[in-house]
Length: 397
Ligand code: PMP
Ligand code: GLU
Image (cartoon, rainbow, N blue to C red; front, side, top):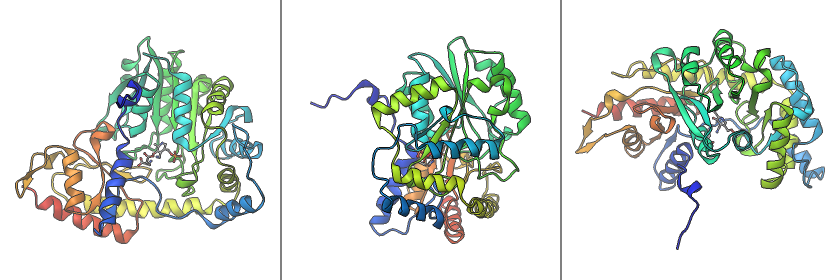
């Protein structure tokens, strides 16, 4: 008899990964599917980073690595925070894990106790809410809308905090909306957090470099809450290294130490070869980062131009990441050939089966009626995909 734990039974599968898989399966059957579902750069890892990976293989980096990461990689991360964010960390405040998703999971497991509340601004990245559940915490969502650029206000944050609040999550630039908080907006949130000494901030800055509105701002810059902020980041998005699986956290010593204890029992150090490549990514030539960012900006404008021409669709202009998050509610309830679109999942399945474009339903991110479209794809595919989107929507009445 199958007897899974209640923990795993309460967990929803990752919708981003599921839609990616559905797109792949249809493609394997011969359909010309354009995949705008999973969020990962379409670029390949830059040459100098690949070379560092090859050198690590030939240089015999084949043994278990230290759990927290190689000392020179920890130093490279410390230097990155100083150089790019003007933040001072010691190596003992940094830990490398198997992707930023793993860093986040470590932090959740080490910080959240059963029944403690975690504030999650919605729309949120799919894994936040599920990781809070694995840690037996309670999600407290703060809703935002396209009209306010999907950002929470200090008042909303204040109202959401209770004596049970342990942490809040922040993601800027955001997955799935692409919105980016300004320094002033973060200052407003930091002032609220400063008044509640039991609340920690987990700030996911994985899209830091895919930013079209100027410099990246971190909530960790505000001294009064600095010792209660944990930054999550990694090399997946900035350096097109999603498959290498290297992420990292920066935070208070005691929390990093606890995460090291957990990781030491669950997985050990991250892959040696991938860590050597990540070292080159952080210390090497950075021109690849701005080249990829420029390509994403061009594609954002391409896709926004098309979406603006679709009737009844509301769409914010994202300041970063590589997603648009249009509101397609006007198409929910419509039909074609006896097929009724009851919700955003139906819409995404219809777009996949009929339009052959894979996207992710907004409800997976806590925003019913929206659809996440990743534009980390070639200009040519995006043009084709937008035509298919328009045709598929126009067929609905
Ligand atoms: N946070 C956000 C907001 C993401 O979009 C992703 C990408 N899946 C991650 C974390 C995890 O990134 P990684 O590939 O480093 O695990
Ligand atoms: N960040 C990506 C996404 O949101 C990767 C998939 C995942 O890890 O969930 O689509």
